[in-house]
Length: 408
Image 1 (tube, helix red, strand yellow):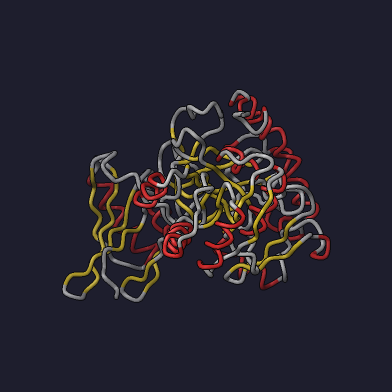
Image 2 (cartoon, rainbow, N blue to C red):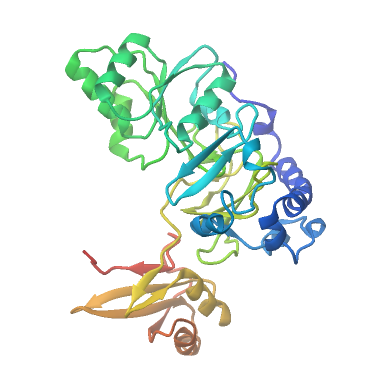
């Protein structure tokens, strides 16, 4: 059995990086020329000058959280696609609402690579329990399976009794769906006396994969893999047989930035996942997913040479309301920037029903902390105590605002 989907996965990291950066100016020029929304966003930038990650970091972010507003002004795609809506193969609607277009072609969401790494091969039967209704997850995995030559049972969500019966009758080798739904199907099959022993592989996404679930599937002889993607971008990263982090997909450029900013963080530090895609129909340029993760050091033992993500570590949008005012991560980043500070955290507590706010900054200079208090008031309109803490002492979890109040 082949270990890798193609030679791209095992090429030298320097070759991958050089190829991505070489393609970057043309992709930005294409977005600027063919997508009206990007023509406005990138009006002041010369695509030919964007030949490094540092230059890419100067471009504005396109935030997923802003897509409902962006698209609402210019339906259906906010001017961020290069072809007319009728030229897409399918158009999906995710909560928000956010509309996504699927381009024509084989495996346009690029999930075949992730399924291959899980062990799926030509001739396998795969029970697809992702939704086929409006959202693209079901189609994402179906087209990936189709590219591998697998037969797909388009089971969708719900109806565990029917799912269990189909699994027993059709004997799929594998399952794709959310992490917990397969457990419900297997337990229903046990109740009904159905044999589901054919299922040896499970590829999950779209929800937290907790250790008890891994243990449950392992006890039933099922090899479990996960992947990370979005309805906008398709595949971002995937687990391999090494089970050490998620290998970044080919054909995308990933940055990890400080929440609330577009500034890249050091390797290993937790931040927001930002992706630039090389899709010609929907050329996302610095698409901020709103998800937190970090780059793992070193290479995967599986032989793939792309960088690895630690996995999904939470949400980057930590905005909260304090004393009647909203505070955003970007505001905290601005306070830190004005004083040359790298890391800080706003801690919000409640003392007898009254909001108590402390900005912790990594600095050995108490005078800097005192000056930051004035800047905090200027930027956020909130009075907050500022506490200097030793450099390197704040947790590496991507949190810029930590709200410990119980708001139930």
